[in-house]
Length: 322
Image 1 (cartoon, rainbow, N blue to C red):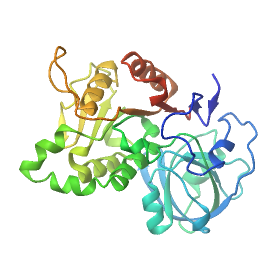
Image 2 (cartoon, rainbow, N blue to C red):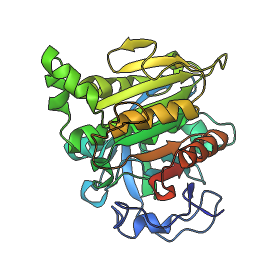
Image 3 (cartoon, helix red, strand yellow):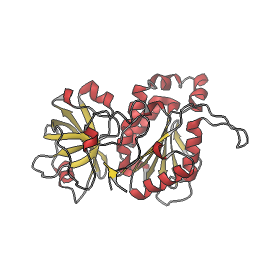
C-alpha cells in the first residue's frame, strides 16, 4: 500500500485537516526517494549535541529565519549536513511550544552505516556547526487531536516524534497545573481516574532507551494525566498488568512486548471505563486516537490489534522509518 512520509495512506482523519504547514506536508511524498516538490530550506546552527543512548545523538538546532519555520508535534525534517549530498530524515523530538520560546528544536539521530548524514552527526557534528533543514511529514497531532485521549505506541527510536506529542499535550491542554495539583492526596485519585495519554514503549532495556528521561519528565510534570509504560523485550516474557512493576508514580516497566492485552487495557483506561463487562460506563466523552511509530513488524501488529479491538482505521496513525 502506498505511504506518505511513512504513513499508510488513508482517508483524512478528524483533526488532520487543514495541515499545520498548509501545502508543505503534502509535498513530502514518500520515504523511498520519490521526487518532492520544492519547499523552503532554512539555515540552522547546532546549539548542542548530546548522547541520548549508546547509538543515538540528540541534536538541538536554532533556526535563523525563525518566523519562516513551524511544525506540529510528530513531524520530521530533511537535515542537510555540510559536505553531505543526501539529507537525512529525522523526527523532531521536541514541542512547538519549546521552539516558540527559544527558537530551537531537537532531533534524535540514530547511528547508521548506510547514512552519510547520520555519520556526520555522530562523528563530526559540534556546537556552532551550520546546517540546513526542511520540515515535512503528515504524521502529526493537531490541536483537535490533542483534545482526544491519546494511545502512543513506540518502538526504539520511534519514540522521538511521540515525545513532542506528549510535551505539546501538556502545554496546549494546560495539564502541568493538574500535575502539580495531583501531588495533593485528595487530588491524586481523581487525576488517576482519567489519564489523557498513555505511552507504551517497546524497548530492549529502559536504561538505554533513547529519550526515556524526557518522557518520564513529562509524566512527572503532568501527574496522572500522562502514563508511561516501558515494555522490556529482553527475554520477551509475558507482559504484566498495565500498572505492574511501577518504579515511579506515573512511569513503570513491565516485561514482554506490547501485545493485545496491553493495548486493550490502555484503551480501557483512556476511555475511563469502569465496572465489569455487564455494566460498563465511560467517563471520557471523546474516543481515543492511536499514534504508532516503530519497526514495521511492531507497528503492523499494533495496528492489527487496535483494529481488532474496535478502533476505527482513521483513528490509528502510523509512521515508519525502517
